[in-house]
Amino acid sequence: MFSLSDIMQANDGKIYLQSDISPDPNTYFRSAQHDSRQVGPGDLFVAIKGARVDGHTFIPTVAQAGALGVLCNEPATDVPPHFLQFVVPDVSEALIATARMRVRRQKQTTIIGITGSNGKTTTKEAVAAVLEQHAPTLKTYASYNSDLGLPLTVLRLEPQHRYAVLEMGAERVGELAWLCSIVRPDWSIVTSVGSAHLVTFGGLERVAMAKSELVEVLLPDGVAVLNYDDQRVRAMRQKTQARVFYYGLEDGAEVRGSAIGGDALDGHSFTLSYQDVNIRIQLQLPGKHGISTALAAASVGILAGVSPDAIRVALSSMHAVKGRGGIRRGPNGSKLIDDSYNANRQSILAGIDVMHGTKLAKGGRRWAILGDMLYLEPYAREEHYLTGQDLSGKVDYLIAVGDQARYYIEGAREAGMPGDHLYLFEADPADPSQLEAAKQAAASQLVEKVQSNDLLLLKASNLIGIQSILESF
Image 1 (spheres, rainbow, N blue to C red):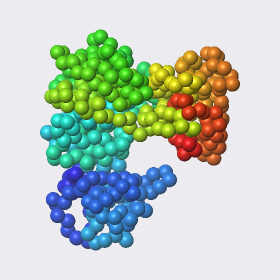
Image 2 (tube, rainbow, N blue to C red):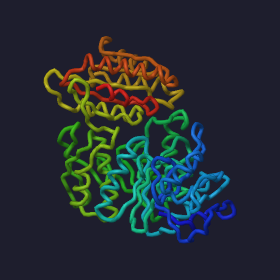
Image 3 (tube, one colour):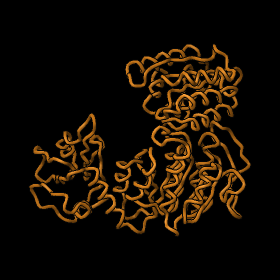
Image 4 (cartoon, rainbow, N blue to C red):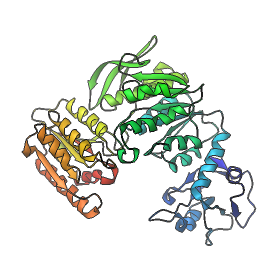
């Protein structure tokens, strides 16, 4: 929720309001939306001019849907007389300025920023679930973690929100520092440093440099919540003047997981320890990375004063976010791990470890269905090759889809996987029809070969759209 005054004051001298009525200066907007399909009564529509779609064409539509107004470069004519059109030179800049103004007047809210190469969204969900046991909490919608998504989330703040859990993504050094200029976190969580977006970062050390920006901006009374098990994240202690709070499985973590039991697929159980508190938690999140997510959320809960039992209840009820490790029916009655939302080498291997750690019924086999990992040049060949090598001994069959995917096959073959267990469906990711044909051919192969006792993992970068394979089952 934000006000007309927030918009006007934030953009003073760069904005004019076009309307047939004089609006009440105390007018409030429910939220801001850049997708016309999500606009509802009381919203502000943000008309972004994209490469393929110009949001300005939807202004009359959102006005009819009940939006109170629009942030735009050019006003529309076919709108109701009460509709408010805030005309600015740069819509994105005006949105960001409004978000800055809005968060500035909500000093009672603790801002929690989350970044990392893997696990941001699930960690955001887990942290919010824990904090909601304690007080009203805002969380990032879906994966709105960019310079567009972050201000849209901030403008959802309500006066009663005691916490705001904000996912922050980056593809370049300096990007997180820029996001923190919109809203500076009071507490920062860094989950991992991995090989995502290497082509824009320029190497793993620069990924670490970029992620550390989230802790560098903390004030001395802030808290950096760091994954002790990731050495690059652990080293970020040197980058901040704030208090450092470690979580992890290794000795040295303040919030520690131990005595791991249960099943990798359905969720591990473990003992969560902090000082003299020890609680047993049964997760419904898959894999050991699910424990890491839970420990991060528990750390924030401890900092916020959430009771141990409330932390246990929140974490025990967590389910995998769609496309991030959920279990669904695969071909011919098999089980499939849908981890189709994006991929890098570390996240693929985490999914493979879940499969490898799952006991199958007699005759059951493990299948990895992997599409290209994008944004890795000049590291693409090596990253795919090393991933393929690490599959040997952990999966029985590999289905590879895309262009760079051939290096999965090369690595797996050289590591000892039998040639007749390797299937390559080549396609140029830039050619939609070619890529879709390759995915459908892969789906047909799975329908023909997979048996009811088998376990499958589906994983690729988002632009591959590997999840469309699911429509064939």
